[in-house]
Length: 272
Image (cartoon, rainbow, N blue to C red; front, side, top):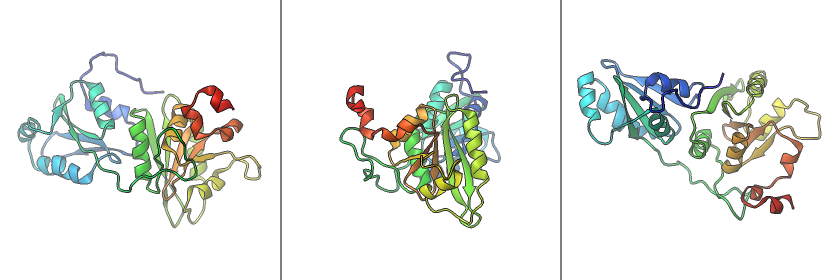
């Protein structure tokens, strides 16, 4: 069953229970508690800076009781969240959400991208964004989170390779993607038995349904805008640690005849 897009109340209070429900099945979603108080902190780990987390959350609230924590939250940079929507949007926008009693506060924890993102060499365009995926999966998830600010973008984390234990992330839009396809993909990935993988295109060959077919069953892209468009269209994205290419599935025959430029021109130009 899909999570409802919004609670029944048109101006609901931000609650921990509703926030946890919205980010269910997101492996990059972190929930922390502190001994000695009733504070709850949640955030998306791939969007936040660890130094900011230590300075504005861990250090101030470690060892503080509820009364001391409330006094800290009354100061800058902690901002009260007016409703559940603001709280969810804040988390998606690289903020941490702090719950104490029946109130919630947001604190900015955004981090800078570690490596300079450059234009992809294999899928360059004249119009449209010029950024591309990198080899770090957390950076790639962060780039997609920046484009799709929705709690319905779900992430699952698996591990492949008896020796390399390579991280493989599955991203899909809950309520849009076909859950049966997601479950089938997870089943195939878990059934892979190999010492290790080092790149996404190598990984694709291990999960093909018909490995002897001349037609590709998965497509790859180095463009975040293309992957985001596919996700919004109900497709599934697979990110392999160490690969700058994101795998998209399922695919149709005509997907391989489209160009990144088609997204930024009128249909007649794209069809020609």
